[in-house]
Image (cartoon, rainbow, N blue to C red):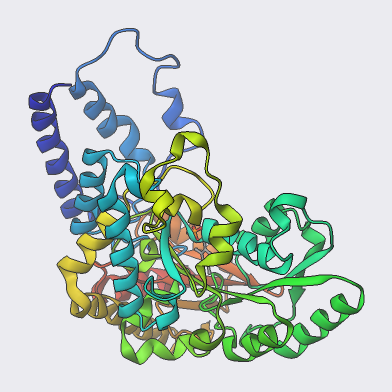
Length: 468
Ligand SMILES: *Cc1c(COP(=O)(O)O)cnc(C)c1O
C-alpha cells in the first residue's frame, strides 16, 4: 500500500469510525449471531493474490458487523465498561502509524520518556502516594492488562520473599499467597503461572454482607501457614471487586502484611480511576502506607480504549531484579549508563507497544476536569438506577454501590431468565454474578454516551420483562 493509497483508505476508515460512533445506538447491543456464523461466511483459505481494500471493508459491513457486540453502545451495561474515546482512538492510531517497539529506552527514547511522564501524571491525578512516582524509589509502567500487572507483582513478591533466589534456584520452599473468594481470577492464575501451585493460593473469608476480606481470618491463615513452614509472599487486596465492587480493608490488611513482611498488591483494576475525583479518594485509604504495588486500568472506565493497564510499585528494585535479563543483542550504551529506564524489565514480554500515546491524548484532551466529570456522571447514573430498583417492591437492591455498578435481582421471576430475555432483545446488555447460591444481575454504567434516558429505558425494559 503506497502512502497515497493509505491516505485514501485511511480517510475512509476514520469516517467509518466516526459514523460508527454516531450511529452505534442503531445496533442491537449484544451480537445476535450463532457460533460459527461469522467464520463460515469467510473463505477458509487466504487469498493467493492481494485484493482491493474495498473488498475487506465490504466484508466488515456484511459479515463482521453482525458479529460485533457493541461495547461503546450507551446501553452496554455488562461486565465493566471498556471506554473508547476520540482522543484515545487517535492516540492508538498514531502509535500504530509510528510502529515503534519500545522495549528499551534506546529503541525509541520518546516512548519510554512519555510513558514515565503519563504514569506519573496519572499517579498525581489519582492522588497516589509520592513513593509510586518515578523520581522516588518506585514508578509505574503501562502493561496490556491488570492480569499481567498481577503476574509481575507476584514474581516481584517471590523475588523479595526468596532473598532474590526464586528466579535462579526456583521455588525451593513452599510460598503462599492470599486472596478472597471475591478476588479476580487473574491472581490465582498468576500464582499458578509463577509456580506456587493453586493449593498455595489461600482463600481468605469475606464478610457475609459487604464481601470485604476478613483481616482476622487472613491473620489466622498466615499464622497457620508460617507454623507449617511456608513463606507467605503476597496478599492481594481489592478496591472494587469484579463481582460487586466490594472494597477490602486495605489499611488493616496492610498492617498485617507489614508485620509479617508480606508484599501487598492492591488490585483496583476497575474502580481505581474513580480517585480522579477527590471525593472518591477514601477508596485508597492505607495504600500510601502499605501497598507494594497497585494496579488500575484506564482501559475500563477512563476513556482509554483497550489495552492500557497501569501497574505502580513502591520500590522498583525487586520488580526489575526479578524480570531483567540482558541478552547480547540488546546491549547498548544508554542501558549500561544506568541513566535510563528500560520498561522491558518491568513486564513479562520483551516487546511493547507505545501505549502512552493514547493515555497522554486522553489526559490532555479531557483535562483533570473532564475526567472527573466523566466519573461523576457514571456514579450519579448508578445512583439513579439504584433508586429506581429500591423503590420497586418486585426487585431487591444490593446496598453497596459506591461506583458505577449496581447489583440487584428480580423477586418474582428467575434472574437468569430475565437477563437472557433483555439481552436477547438487543435493547441493552447486562451480566450477572453469584453471591453464595444467589444470582444477582449487574448493571455497570460508565460509557461516556450513557444518559439518564438510557438508564431509565433499561429499567423500563427490565420491569416490563419481569411482569411478562
Ligand atoms: C477487570 C479486572 C481485572 C482484570 O483486568 P484485565 O485488564 O482484563 O486483566 C482484574 N481485577 C479486577 C478487580 C477487575 O475488575
